[in-house]
Image 1 (cartoon, helix red, strand yellow):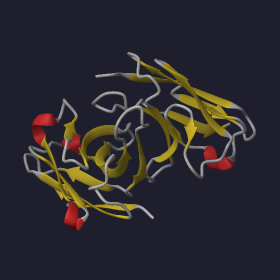
Image 2 (cartoon, helix red, strand yellow):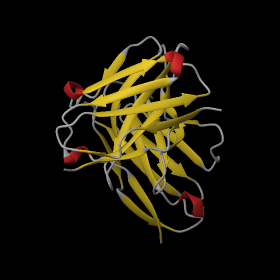
Image 3 (cartoon, helix red, strand yellow):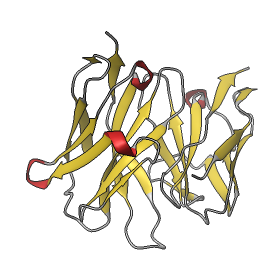
Image 4 (tube, chains in turn yellow, green):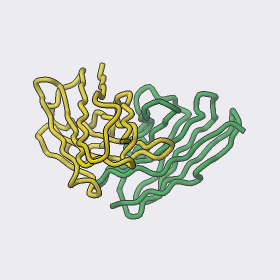
Length: 124
Length: 107
């Protein structure tokens, strides 16, 4: 049974750095084709893909946020960490982590298990 | 970036209706498209991947089709638990963009 759970601060001040941790179980991030991604959703708005880290430590970022994001993994702890620098009120959103299945094409790609999400508010 | 558009953005339907949602990509994405259902306050749920493959445990009234730039999600007979917002996502190239969503409401 795959589960993921996000943790981190619920409130950050503008210009601060946000650090979110995704703790997962039921799979290993050293298995070929597996990844963990981060997706966010501002209140009342659509989903936005942020970043993805693969089993082989390949990392991919949203170009619009790449300069502010860092994604890392700790395979032994079953955790993935996302940091976002220089937070702004527009970054207020629910942040989700999700299990990603991919690998060598033509394998299908998808996010099949999601955490419950954590609401982060950016305000002074 | 590949842009996704969804139509309609909102639809009002009755239980038992057949519902079709369209997702269009700004460039070809082969079959690297997924559909998600999201209910208020909940995480998205994967319904369909690879444009037409039903995720395990998802009712067969959901189906997907398409390839290239045009895709559809069909609910053959809308059930009360299907009232939600539906998102498409392309996974052909980074960034893995989402569509703006289609909210399905009760008529």
